[in-house]
View 1 (cartoon, helix red, strand yellow):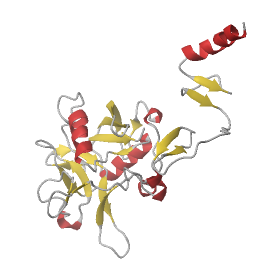
View 2 (cartoon, rainbow, N blue to C red):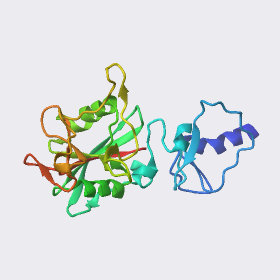
View 3 (tube, rainbow, N blue to C red):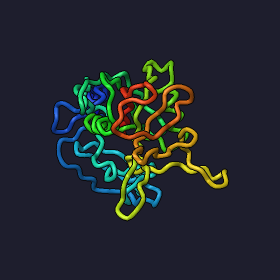
Length: 260
């Protein structure tokens, strides 16, 4: 009889995909509204990942290397200047855009390799790089970063290219910009602190970037913000971050990346 009673007590939890402890409205498979204690933990190894929780209590795995300011992906929220939020917390609809205009979300896709979500947006009027950065922050994500050929190719095939359903045929700001450090020359860097993947098969070794030939060239000493060029292979180019169009094409489309 006790076994039958226990079965019927557990059955509702098995049917409902989400279980709450001290909450009647769970938002995850297991949602604990209170402190968590584990009485017995196995000894780990140096290859184990570490559990981390964001401000909302969502638990995720991170590499041990992230404790040194950058993870296996190189992501560094200190360099970015804020902690990105899950894609589920983004504004829908996006609403007003920094600098003016409104945004329309065209759709989102998740890349299984890094579990990041990439959302495409159409802006009602051209936007500067700086306002684009603030829009990414406002949405809880950040301007897309592509430090490897693998990620760049996936973004191009699934978000940028014709046939994806997003029609991103105009200039697109990305998260690569110029940084000025005291006592050092200006340097371009991914806003997340990520580093380009290195191709060691060449001599000298090269980074897996997608800049057009001769770019970035910091023309006139004023360029530093990076965008995806229109047409062709959708190469990258550096421009002044204050411009809103290039080659008669507006900067009115964005890709915002979310870590989860």
